Length: 383
Ligand SMILES: Cc1ncc(COP(=O)(O)O)c(C=O)c1O
Image (cartoon, rainbow, N blue to C red; front, side, top):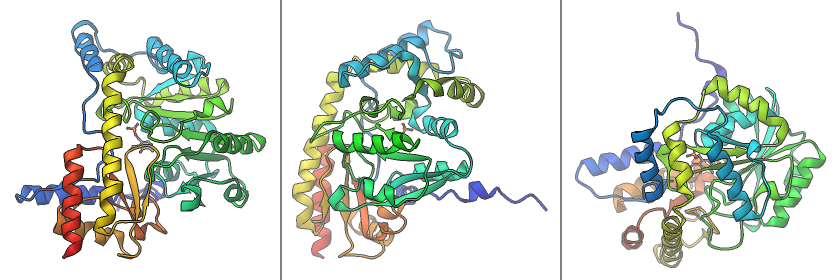
C-alpha cells in the first residue's frame, strides 16, 4: 500500500474559478461565445519597453543564474520606484526579487513564522494566502469584515482574534477592489508593531487606483513586509516576477531560503522588468481603460438586477452581493455562463462562509467586452 498524501497538502482547497474557466472553454469549443469576466489578469502584453529589453537580452546575454536576491540593477530600480512613487527611502538591500508575488509569500511566511503560528487575514480575500499558510502548517485566522469597513480588517476584529503572529492586508483588495486609507494602515501597523506581530502588506494592485491614494506599508512601519509584483499594473503575469521589501534582519534568512528553494528568479524576466518602469505611459493607458470599464459596469449592471455592488477603488474587480438572487453562488455562476455566456467567479473562492451569496466580476478586459456583458446580462435577467 502506498503512503497516504500529507495532511498539509490535503488542507489546500482547489480554486473553483478553474472549474468556471474549464466550463467556459467547453462552451467556446462547442461554438458558443463567452464574455470573460472571471479572469484576474490584464488582457494586454508586457509594455513595449519590457519586450524590447527581453529581445535584447536574448541576443546579448547568456540567461544564466543570477544572485538569489535578484539582479542588483533591478533591486536598485525597485528601490528608486519607492522614492519616486511614495517619497520613501528604501535601501536596495531590502529589496528581494521573487518569482511573482506568489514566490514571495512562502519566503515571507517561512522567514516570519514557525509551524503552528496563527496568521490573521480578511474574509473575503485572495484564496492563495490561506492555502499557502495551510501548506506551511500555519493557521489562517479569518477576520470577519463588513461592507461598512470596505471588507478590510479593523482593530476591533484584531482585538478579538486571539494570539496571532502575523496579519495579511491587501489594499486594493482582491476580490473587492477596496483600500485601506493611510491612517487605517498606520493604525494596523502600529497595532502589529506594539505586539511583535508581522504585518504582510500585499500591494500587488498598487498603480491600478481610481479613487484615493495608495500608501505603502514601508511608509508607516519599519517592520512590515511588502509584497508586490509585475503581474498587474505592469501587465506581466506570465513573466512570473515580483518583489518583497523586508526589514534588514530578514534579508539574510530569506536569501538562504531563496538560494535553496529557487536558486534565482528567471533572468530574462528580470531584464524585462527593469525596462517595464520606462513603459508607464502605455501602462497608465491600461488603467484609464479599467476605469472606463468599471464606470460602465457600475452604471449598467443594476439594470440586470446586479445592484448590490462594492465600488472598486482600485484593482479590476467588482464584488457583487447576489444573496437576494441565490444562496449558491457556484450554481448561479454556472447558470450565468450556460444561459447568458458570461463567466464570473463565485464568491466561495474568496469567502468559504459568506461567499455563497457573492460573486466577483473582473473588468480587466476590453471596454467592448464590458458593453457586451451588460447587454447579455440584461437580456438574461429579463427571461
Ligand atoms: C491579491 C493578489 N496577490 C497575489 C497574487 C499573485 O500574483 P503573482 O504571483 O502573479 O504576482 C494575485 C493574483 O491574482 C492577487 O490577486
